[in-house]
Length: 509
Length: 95
Image (cartoon, rainbow over all chains, first blue to last red; front, side, top):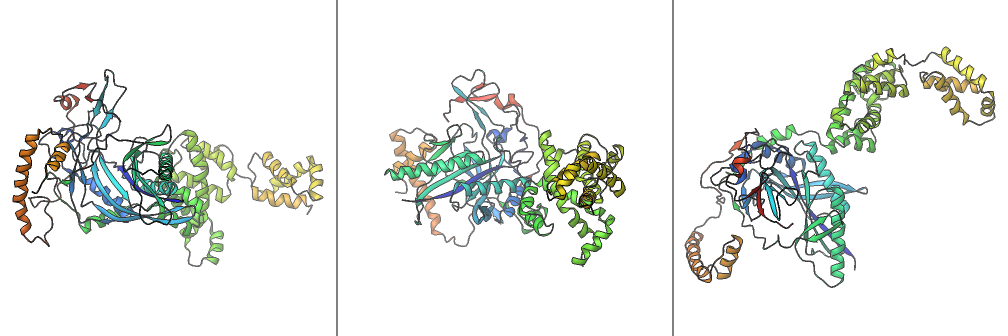
């Protein structure tokens, strides 16, 4: 029999606030155990939680970016269970009235678009951390660190609309990109800032009744999610084929074996007895507040990609790469913004451009002129140099305005693209403008036909054999001559002029 | 009966309470009386009334996202029955 998998994901997003959700303790990662705690997050009797307003704002941002309805009224609830990392004996979460509902994300897998529903997004506090080893004197006990207790989380719950591990990964990557773009999550999966529980079931193809599902907890990388889901699908199918039944349970993914295993024991009658938390008053969100947050949203990756393709004429691939992170996209846009202002220096080209684009102004033309070269440089040299130096784009020593100056020098023909790479390397380690570097190092491109002709004549005289080959039809040797001329000019000859003159002379015109 | 002995035992387990059979008997009777009393409320027509989650008509109590000093590890652990190297020490939790 053939089976169809049905998958729903619950994603926990740790919010990038300075303080915890219900108290003023810092959320900084890596502090010594229990140093960032107070009566509220320790669960002391009588301590009163007060909601961090920024958490609400971040939740609204997430809701708007995932097409959710923002609830005008929502309520916090207590989820009751006992575990040593939960000091109060309950977790403050939202249950019946979450802050966001009924959203969706559109994903694409192998060229096919698909819409994944988002059931709800709610706010909650994280639990503390349990440590089972590496504490001197721990013996056969566990240590509890409550620094993470009360850290703000969003739980984003999808509909069971996902049908394969690849769709699950596409959905997660998109969601990850969005929360990082929104500036509400640092996206660090290793530190647990973005983690996923996968609900997986299988049913015979064509069936409309879902099978019994299992929940695999806390998978913290895209690769592990794929492995865990694929393993779970296969395990459930085998079990059913052998005449067994899938048990509804919580499972744990083991990255070392790529398998999931049952977590029975922690399970024990899931009855959380949710009820409204009397310590926290209802949350009422006005339309004005939602509108304010909507205005503050950055342009999201999807909208940016579309704009890069339609307005800037970039390819799908370029648009995808440049919008991968908000920092990269902003670096590119700042470079282009600055570069297009020098378009005034290209009046001839502008007049030419206006023939086919009569309504274009100078800045439109500048954008047209530099969109592709700026993209190539950001994706090429800039990314290469950053990778080599192990730096992020925010730390790039060559600023967007400086890169724009370099692009202008290339466009003007002052230097060739090849020389520009030398100039770029120099800009990387010094504070000088590209113009100053070009002047200092004598790198100005030679476009003077007389000087270039002289070099070509010399090269041809020294390589008469190849000249003959060319003349009998071996056009491949043309590249050899270009290389020789460029080398003789130390890379400074204008390649366009070299090509033109060389062709003429080799043909004996 | 509004509640059974089995339900009282289930709630006791969730609350980590150990009850003797006599206690279960007693509490079942008491809880039954409480539920029967509260049942009276069902006689009211509450359609069209928003469920009340709080007795006080207050909404939107916020704090700004500004760090305030924590109380320090020593204070945090002052009431702990057992500790080790700045951690609360608890019986081994099997993951």
